[in-house]
Image (cartoon, rainbow, N blue to C red; front, side, top):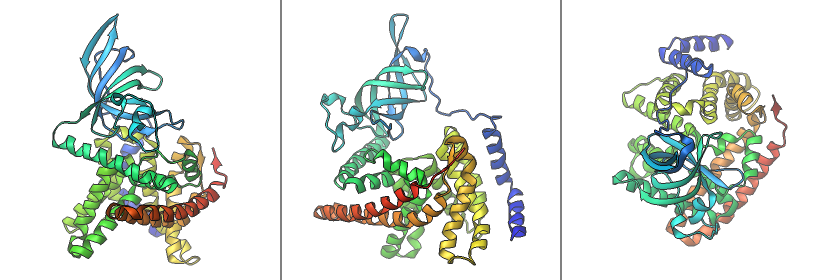
Length: 428
């Protein structure tokens, strides 16, 4: 078994794509090479002089733990600054992080009541154009917004499509709000928005070693790909399964937005579909992951230092490298299905220990067990939620029924998560 593992490892190291990915990772994470940000913020004045920025929202807003503001990135178009007592306006390029008051972002959200002028209400979604007034915060490298004004959405067909997405996400939040605590979890799982998720719930998932469940990743992509493919195969025939699976992936990515882990999963799916299209019968998925790592680093260099990026690639690499060996040791002791889940969790944990220890200072070994127990329940919860959403859109009077059932399942799910979260982590 050890001999087979070493033979496979040496064979993979002989692949030039794998070697290139390992070399790039070594150079970047050792600090020898610094990847330039392709969307670095540039203005022809001192940033401390900025008092206004106009641009287009380019990422989903993320709420801070205190609930006082949302942070997102803005594709800057122009800025206004006060230089030596004179107010000047200049062009800008690249993307800048902005912190927007929660009252402006949540003005349209259900359950959020603020006394604000209509002009201050903001549909804070990708593709929406805004004018932000505030000041630059050097210590945080962001622009803190005092007041914000919506100025429409991006021009052209692409802008209209993004505006439709914004309205769909707002409608989805209103539907999920009616489902209470269960709806908050569904909202997080399907859109990446944790606006209504209690911070203590997120902490419980993290302490239980289940952060990957809340992070948009390959698990969610596989779910929608499989769902769309299965439904399409039943309606149009099996030969359309792959195409409709790709449609499901595209829709989910369009609706949820691209996080580092979701972009990794999307690129892997596209690489595998391309391999099938040219009739590749045997594909080493580790080589595919290495190729995706290189492409991702070129497309979005700023993601490479993101913890979600490192954990996503590290976990999948660990599964591909170690799970087979662990499975071979466990298969004689536990049922094959259980052994497969445990071996995948062990592989992911082993590979991500250095990242967790360096970034967070803790490692959650309980995640090996909690992933095996909780992940199937999350998949069931997600499947029931999708059925409930479709049924509620067709027959709105069914929405309370699905909300009640989902809250029962949510209570059981959260009870298990909180139980696992009580296991002490390893602190470095």
